Length: 231
Image (cartoon, rainbow, N blue to C red; front, side):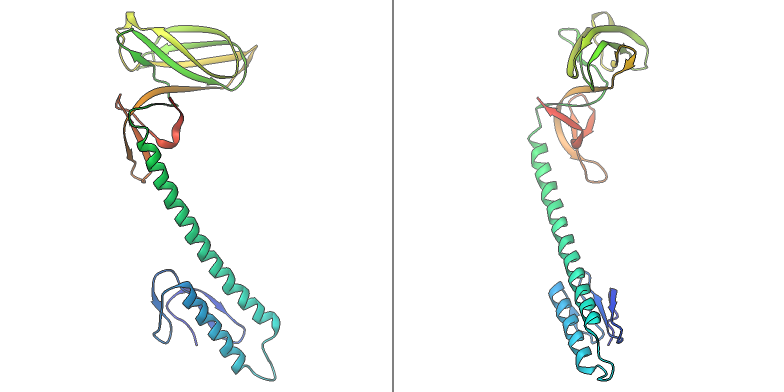
């Protein structure tokens, strides 16, 4: 009495085998279709009753063996139900993320990045960064797209947290592609920094793996999960 069309067999010491079905429909050894968890559990219990009815009176199935088999079917059913619940939650979360991301279109967000935001009218570049701790000396080096040093913005003593700075781009044609690098120390000890960039969201999309991405007006993009704050 052996089911032959699924995996994860649960075999008793008396030779009976119960096979857990996947969510897809299949057939057992008698050609009967097993389509869901409740039917699979029902068939298992019928097999267990058949064992009890046909066991050797001189060598009956002991309580430990029967309890073990019941525990196995309960474990399998519980795992299947948990998988179904987790899948449902993941689907709901993905749908909620899509709704939240669509609400960002037209708004400015802050993500990790080292590109200077350029205001061509004011001929000014601005940037944002975070300090992991208090710093006695902070400076920002302005770099060209190729990495050439163009200037430095001394900021002096700053507390831990988020800070902004501005740099006059007039003599450099106020062009895009300028970058910045933050250096911070507390005495002689380096302080951790995180460079941030401010961009306006133009549209939303997804990468090859299906994860949400934000497309910015300057042509760049970033994962939805990279958003630090919404302005």
